[in-house]
Image (cartoon, rainbow, N blue to C red; front, side, top):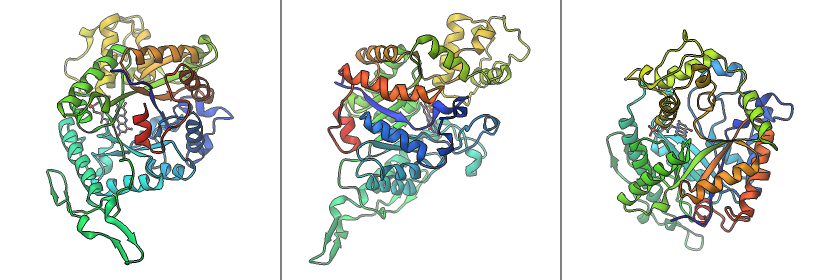
Length: 434
Ligand SMILES: Cc1cc2nc3c(=O)[nH]c(=O)nc-3n(C[C@H](O)[C@H](O)[C@H](O)COP(=O)(O)O)c2cc1C
């Protein structure tokens, strides 16, 4: 069943400044390591009545890209959102904490702190992460199975810790001098495969709607985990068929875990290169990727599918049979599948393959065009039942961000696909309002 309205949450990773975007005079890049840049986007996202702003995060720093752009360098996402909490009133604030590198007691406390500081607007993007093991004493990345097993246990411990000091235990009865009812504050005594946590949490539960969970990861295990535990899925769906398939899988896994399909919202990333005309939008996309050299493009291809094309001429077609059978890619399964699908379908010449947006940028759903083009395509995906919403990832320039917030979102609201004012105060209420 279709939901009445889209859920929309703005990514705070300043994708519109990556590539060459940060070099523009008005880019605001100097505010990257203060709260200025993110706060500006959060305020404008709140003015557009978005469900939430969301900060993806990684715990490692690939150096080569830092020469030309800010790469993965960033403030800690939970601290950044705590600063934004004081300066906003309605918009949800979703932070990212990795279950592979973190600890559930610390995570439970940080997340519940953000929920209190924002009066019920916090959310948690649960990631198992793809890289960064060397920063946490792990000689290699644990296998996908091991990471998801740990993620399930981690999430369960966090939720039990939140419940260990329930809101009703907090009495603050001045007359009787009774601060809390300690009969209700109970240890969790968790002894598991990965963690041993006694509890209770040293912070009461926020006395309002609960803190929703987002999941990012598209493998069968990731989808099962989302069906069990997530309210939202940050998906990677380059085309409408992939989104429809993923939506179907999420519904099946939600039902298997005795939840309703609509309880798990599929919100793919949507890369938006927007401009007043289609030609300008395409120019923006090409200009933004101009400094990615042939070698860097070839490296990306090798990383994704294991094919070394350093000595190949640009006019040689690339066929599925050219790809090595066994290759373990550090990219997501969706990214690898998208690149393999292009090779399978088109057998493209190498030069054309190396110029594809899927290699140059991301394999997110991608729209390069005008705000009207974007509104029409989003309407089509939504009415087809492929997505419940999306996470805009504007690219190319500040103007592309401006057009997303100030032209695209109002068009969706006018078309009745998105709210034109807030009806609730907390993130859970916003999600249930759509
Ligand atoms: C759309 C998307 C966004 C992601 N964002 C993050 C992130 O911000 N931080 C992170 O450490 N990992 C991130 N990941 C990686 C996932 O947490 C997960 O480790 C990875 O996708 C492998 O799981 P899978 O095989 O189920 O896809 C993201 C993955 C996807 C698909």
